[in-house]
Length: 328
Ligand SMILES: Nc1ncnc2c1ncn2[C@@H]1O[C@H](COP(=O)(O)OP(=O)(O)O)[C@@H](O)[C@H]1O
Ligand SMILES: [Mg+2]
Image (cartoon, rainbow, N blue to C red; front, top):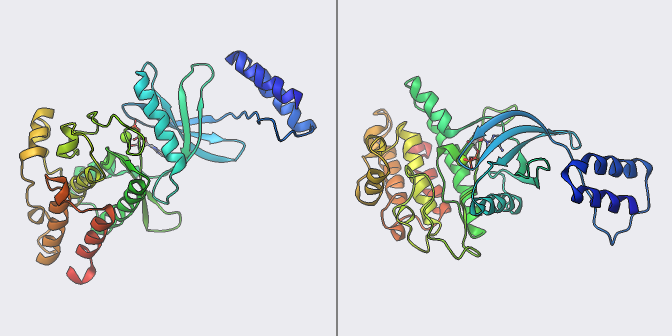
């Protein structure tokens, strides 16, 4: 145990001594020793970076390999030089991911600091597939629409994950196709979706300052884009509604406004009417199904938060009902 303590001290003294500390710890592991349960455990692990998977405002996501557990992981590394408030959000994102256990949320395994650069990182479940934004862009390039069954499954999963986060007191605040990851289940035709990126999530049980304006202006609810206090889970329901419109129609409901800048988008969210979704859906779908889908999006995207679905589960049920085969 003395060797373990020595290894911990070495690692703390200087990042450059981590190799020496690692060697010491490995030496202890191979030789064996007396375990003292009252001491803390020193742990050292090297992830091998394999490939870059994506990049957003706060971090870069890499595929990496964990040689100890012999599995792939995804590692998100915080970008250098960001203000400390963003670092706190990043750490909170990792902790939310570790706390939430749900089949449609990516599980966070580990959080650490890279010793040479001092950059924060966290390791999470590695997902294979594509985010919904990429799928939508590809379909559009080929003048295709995403299969309705796929859209139904994806939003069923995402709304289920949203409900789980809401029950834990979190408001995601950045629900959009780029943060929805779609994987094919191994050996299945079926897809599975996960809601990613709790980087700007609001923890209603902890965060006192919740008026900061964040999220993607293409998807944010009026009360969120205006920085109103006490926004709640209904802001995510609005963003899910806009995303659902886009996934079903193949184009964003405020498409014509997007090129005109953020101010025009704010106005569209706060005052504009959504185009009728039913008119954007294929003519051969039954009128009932088109009308029901339009209702789901209209209720989810009501300007006044209190007029939206009162929970993600309620929206999920309404969507399931709208897509029921007998209504086709
Ligand atoms: N666990 C994961 N497995 C595979 N790819 C991922 C994973 N997490 C994120 N990505 C990819 O990286 C992109 C950016 O990740 P995200 O968490 O949204 O970062 P940011 O906060 O920078 O937007 C995602 O759109 C997705 O394509
Ligand atoms: Mg993102």
